[in-house]
Structures are given as structure tokens and as C-alpha cells.
Amino acid sequence: MLDYDAHRSRLIAETSAFIEWGLAHPDQVRWIPTKRISEGGFSDAMSRVFWAGVFGASALVPGDLVHRFLRWVRRG
Image 1 (spheres, rainbow, N blue to C red):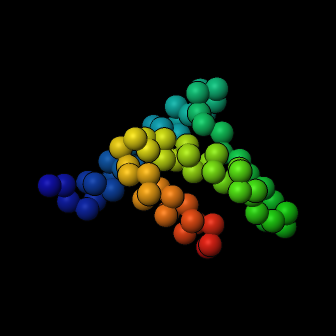
Image 2 (cartoon, rainbow, N blue to C red):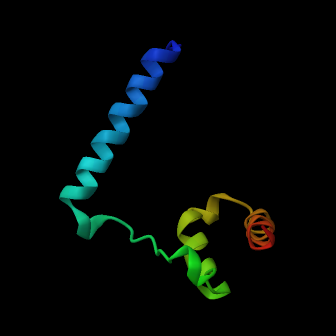
């Protein structure tokens, strides 16, 4: 098992490599929609599109679990 500092260094290196790759290949990175804070929230449809991408492997996760999580997110 890695000690904390080694694990932290590895995570930072992996994150850095991913960010550098994403900046070099913007056409291969999933676009994350943004909105100004003063403009309010996203529509329900846009929320579903975003979370469907997050849970793209939904075949591996029970559907009711995904739906319960999405309902919880909408309430928050």
C-alpha cells in the first residue's frame, strides 16, 4: 500500500497528465455546460443530459439507483 505522500504525488501527476492531454486534444474532451451564477439553474432536460453522461455506464448500475440519485440532485 502506498503511503499518503506517494499516493498524493501519483494522483497529482495523473491529473496533470490528463489536463495536459485534454488541452492538447479539445475535440476529444466532453464539453461541460456552464452558466453564470446570476442566470439561475439548468433546465430539467439539460440536467438529465449531463447526468446521463456522468452515469454513462448505467448498464452497470441499477436504474433505480440512478433515478434516486437524480431526484436527490434536483432537490438540492
